[in-house]
Every structure is written in C-alpha cells, then in structure tokens.
Length: 322
Image 1 (cartoon, rainbow, N blue to C red):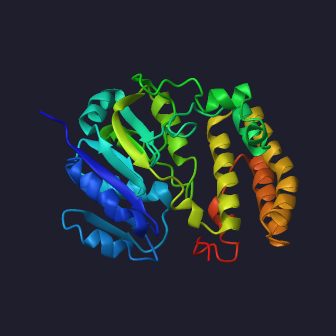
Image 2 (cartoon, rainbow, N blue to C red):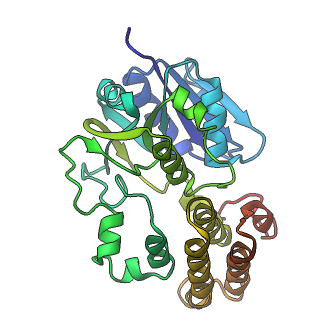
C-alpha cells in the first residue's frame, strides 16, 4: 500500500505566494494540505479559504515557524509530513521523495525561479562551533571561500547524485510522521524563526535516522519572503538568539561559551554598521546591547530566552517592517 503524505505550510503575511504555492501543491497529488496562519495581517486566510480542500488553522498570535509546523502536523492523518514554505512551489517528484524518506526523512532539489540550484542553502552540513564563530564574526561573509564555510555550505555537493545530507532547509522537507512525533516535533524555543530546522535535523540523526537527498524531487523557492518582513531590530535579536540556543543545546560547555564570546564580540562592530550602513541611529546600540545581554546570559547560565528579550523591543509584537 502506497504511504500517504500531507503538506504543512506555515504562513505569515504570505498572501503574494500562497495561491501559486497551493495550486502547485494540489497538482503534486498530496493527500492532505494544512495551512497554519500565524496571525497574518494581509489577506492570507481569505486566499486559503478559496481552496476548499485545504484545511486552514488560524492562530491568534505568531507561534513561530516551529509552533506552526507542530500545529499543522497534529492536524494531519497521513504517514508522512511534507514541511513546505509558502514561497516554495513543487514542480515534481513527490513519489521519489516518499521512497527516499524510508530511512526517516528526505529532501529534494531546491531551485530558484531561474532554475538554478540554491547553492549554499539547499544542502548544508550541521554547524560546528567553529562554523558559528565564523558566521557571527563575519568571516564567512568576508572570505566565503574559506575551508570552514565551504565545508558547512557543501561546496562539494553533487546535485545530480542521490545521497545522505545532514541539514536540508525546512522549506521542502519530508519526514515520517512517526519520527516527527518520536522527536516531539520542532522546538518552539526557536522563535519566531531560524535554527529550528537545523536543530530538528541534528536530533533526527542523533536518534539514528537518515536524511536522504533525491534530485528527482524538485521545487522552486523564492527564499526570504517572510523573514524579509520582520522588523529589523527583532530580526537581529532572533537570529543571534536562535544561534545561541542551538549552541547551548548541541555543544559542550567550552564550545558553547566560545560561540557566546564570539556573539558578544561581534555586537560592537555590528552596532556601528547598524548606524552607518543601515541608518538605524542609536536604536542599533539598543538592539546589540540586547544581543550582548543574550550572549552574556548564555555564557553564565547556558540558557537563552528569545521571547523575553523580544518583548522589550518596540514594535516586536507585530514583528513586521513598516
């Protein structure tokens, strides 16, 4: 008997992408489609309602990507869960993706809208402490060809070859529902977005499962559609906070403190670039003072609470750029 598969799409002000995404997902032959709307302020819910076979779950507040996925999976009755971004349009290969996921999970070929492989994003290795230190200090951005960055972003990845992959993004990711429940779903402490899919991939492989890449499954992905709408100060806080949370959960005592020190050290130059290049004025100092505080708390306690710091930012309840 062929296994069943359902899609979970988490929407946050994604009206411009939802209709083509849902049309492509329906055409791909998924058995069930659930859209979890995280309190969108556009007409996302009305668009979903125009697709009568798609189930809509409306959240009164922003539960984040992890929270939205968890709520969507609870509504599915299928054997497999396809986690799909609203700016990701399936082209082909769901059957191949199902076959590849027999070992736990699978990912397909993510292409941009010109048809090119999304290099550096569509397949990565799990981050090491050195990877994250290079990320926060800007070394990977200034010297992208360095060996740490090339290893992390899978510069040697053969997109035509089926193979195991450590960290595909949660934009086009299939997982057995039983495995998802065994792992207690995604960690909602990563909020509203970033590193929740990395954490899930790390826990999945630690539990003995595999993530298989299959080039036969293809989807076109815009990328950044929702995160680009996040209020800039909160975007900075959420990214650094999620990175620190990942370090506290997956690295040892010394390694996570090295990452925390790197984040603290990066706060000073980042505040200057926020003033000079982003024209954020003195607000940049306030943002990176909170980032520094998160890093300090990580160093001292080994815990990170992104929500508590996020609530201190003016406008963070909306999370949206004006």
